[in-house]
Image (tube, rainbow, N blue to C red):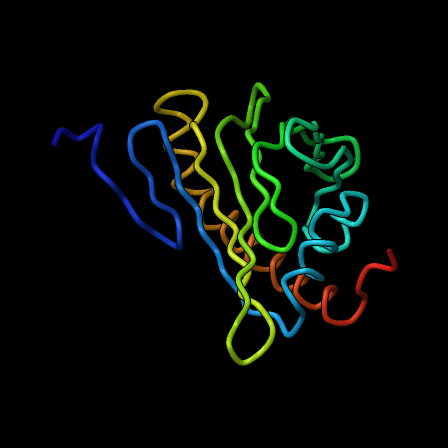
Length: 164
């Protein structure tokens, strides 16, 4: 295995060549159905994910656009929904110029009530060696934001369930 293929794992981030994998999970007192409803209510995305807002459709083939940043400084993240299983799983393909790859959320019921929420990303790094260096610094920060976001999502699903 050459230096380019070496796997580096740090802060919940696995880096291999031009790809990075992130995975975070939390538990919630809410049902998988409730978590799914809050998660896929795209206008509520900014309530739980720091520095991000989203809009788009629902179901396989629908498109989403997320904006990550502060005010006018940031970037658009375009996506297509590739899987849609109410109460179980939603997956997207990132199709933008900066963010490319796959992401998915899985909601699993717990035997003791509530649910486990898993968020994973498999992303292609932009900018070659510069991108790999940047992810070495930014990856653990993004992993932290993902964990904060999932904890907020769990609280929203527990305390402010959807009204539909």
